[in-house]
Length: 252
Image 1: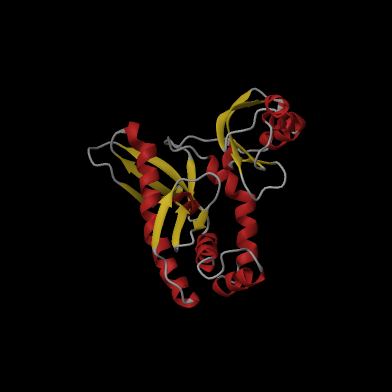
Image 2: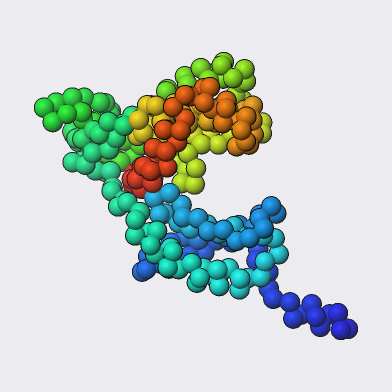
């Protein structure tokens, strides 16, 4: 009987994964709370582009601990989110980078929904044909096709050098990471990387291919990264500085 009474007094625990919303400086953001067996403390991360928040917690944490943790870091969240770039909507008249080079989006009517790169007196342009309502989606589809073409070729090149083989290559619109490598050899990439300069695209592919040999970020991993991409440090720094702006662009 006493033991049952003590169990009732224990604070409620968090579910392994919980999704809800959190308000920061008047902005309502999706919040994902994830339990990780390897976590020893609470960690807070802002998704790329300021699209949401993620809290990683140790197993068995009391529900109230997360609320206190978020309250303690409210000021930090407000400061960081204030620095997040604006979220421009893809539309005619704005510029988006393609392989690091800004292109002016130009809409031209017509029944064919094609997208092609061009050059005029104003510089590089991206001509988008078809219904105006589908322009943003067509630009995203264009970037996906370019990513598939370039990245598959780079994967083949770096795999040959590394002496490894990728099981599959996938493309997604991820907000938490630019690429990943699973234990079975599946490589995943964000197609948004096609907005980065070509050397940065090459670095990202080299990084994930290196994981086919080294599933960690230890010294041997970074040594292999440097062998595959001598510009590793410079490109890694570029992505850290500018990646948030690329993730913030809205294609919806």
